[in-house]
Length: 546
Image (tube, rainbow, N blue to C red):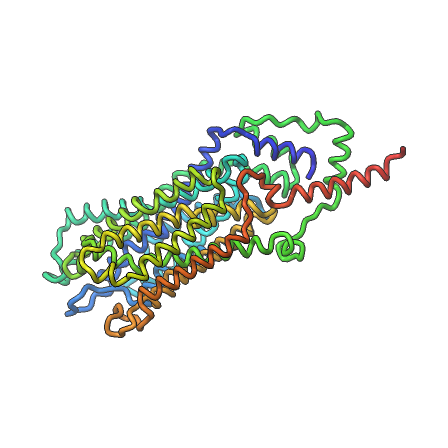
């Protein structure tokens, strides 16, 4: 690392919080707002899709998506996200963060609109078109994970880095709430304009033809926040750390940062001639530049990557398994009555209202507790405590499961336990697993390693959303949801999820604490610089006559 590099990075690490930091949080955060809106809003409209496209004449219950169609519609975006995390994570290290950042956002905008325009003459063709665009939407969303985290970590000072990255991630909570609120407003407007009876009264009339516009509008509106921030995203300069450490242009890095941050960086030309000579020798020396698949990376960061990937994988199994017991909660507290007693739009309205309340009470507060405290208590403490509390609350739901669900009057306690589980997921590993991979790997591999960790998480999301959807079915074949085989039951599934959380706690011990440390200190790039400088000094002393 040359002297100019050190000046730029030191200036960034010690810079005071400025207006541009907040601008970067908003620009990067709106990407995550859109990510959450797009990924979660599909769960709001799946019941409506079932009523519109899969109604069975003469059936006493409304139409529902067949299990394989439901799994595909909900899961194809996760597969796209996993693919995008790996691809754009790698590309962000090869081409630079800025060049790739605009691509992901434009892909999200175009595919959000296209999802709502899904066409076809049969239910199968409409679902196939929807799934095609949802995959590419997920692909763009996937790229936002490593790029947003890496960009924010490389802009921030070491004292506030955790809070800034957490604030970007916390926009997910607002995206989830926005999806619910949009669904509430749109469904309420259509109900007022096109009133319909309950399914039990008039099966055909309970789903007005105009309902086909409702789900399309909800999906398409996800493009708006991303489109509004596209201009500012393209105007963001390349991060100084990428320019200085990967592109090897410290002077350009200093110029880029001087445009947006009020930092004092001495001109490289003003350095002492001896220092300049030695710095250029260091730059010319073959610095340690080990690759991802090298033995040196395995020795230095292999356990770190295992820790970040395993904890994210295990966390997302538990986090995305929420659909196991949401229906128990919503029906227990009377938020969602039996489907046959509602029209299609009323059912959408009630589902959206229920999910918005859960997000408001359990999801959003946890994110912002992390923002407030992560640079105070550290990443390790928050992640370990979160996994531990999630284990405790899931066992608290599982051990007396029949007490919560079968005994009248106990549903309030069930809701509280459920809400606390999500609070400690977000004031815990759901936030820290996103933050830490952006802090502990070298600049030239940072985006790639974050993408690998995030892709592991999405693999866990697929297991949690769909593997446990089958596992959680009743052991009595007569009590399973329509089209599903018998499983192990919700109670036993909760025990398995508690075990996943305990494993997550164990893997947390593989991840180093990064609070208050510079990125170069965490990644070992300071050690590389010291080695290169020593080699350059030895070479310099050998070539200069005494």
